[in-house]
Image (cartoon, rainbow, N blue to C red; front, side, top):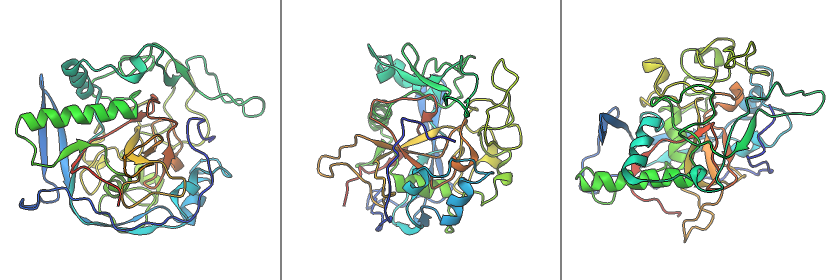
Length: 368
């Protein structure tokens, strides 16, 4: 499938990584155990759950064999593009020395709504002149033999409140059409709220995960280089992920064209968070890590590959102008829903109805 124009498409060189130094718990605090979780009360019966991810090692990136599968018949990603090269030349072992907490699911519409109501926050897409990338209801196919037409367009008047699904937006859907700036604002609000309530240890904050934290969390504790958190076979993903499948598009007689999984997941667009229950959770208890919606991380995009330490455009100033997103989305082909997939976003104000995020709890991260 053609990479979207919003994504980075530049060559790569060998991935170089070093140990991940992320101090998450206070030095005098006892570290929680794998499987521990806690609920954050956002008010009005809305909560947000985070789970503890213990220290460990994982293989970051992908093998040549994995990339070949991703661009083959079953994977469906387009051969000859630069997308797979962003994953590095080969997997690199990364050590996560300290535990951290991560959202059980992506942030939901209902959770983001509580933030917007409490803070009066206006997202980038909602500001005067703002716009977001959404599905074009007039789209009738790619027309690959003539002029290629993509199913997404930038629209004003659409936002996380109405991502142009063509059906009501549900509170249990992952929030989409929010920018990197919007996501950071949500995390800052959550930090302030929990700090005032006495729910934070000194030095901790809610933020986006680093790229290494996200991929480590996605792999669910596996030390092997696997395509998906459950293994290498896409068939074993049935009942585990929301991806381009046999479901019909709303009000139409057609499903998404090109490569798709050979079953129905019940949703032509996005599915509710944690919809698949225990079967959809990996070894760390995280839900929807593959497919669903692209998830932003805190890092600045480096086309050479991911970094073990947080990567900023300017390390001193901690600047990011092209965020990284990972994990694939409900519309994408199977080859783009792997653990190692990574894409660069055009700007910190860009938003899309295929993009969302999940929170991470840890100390502020600085580049080495």
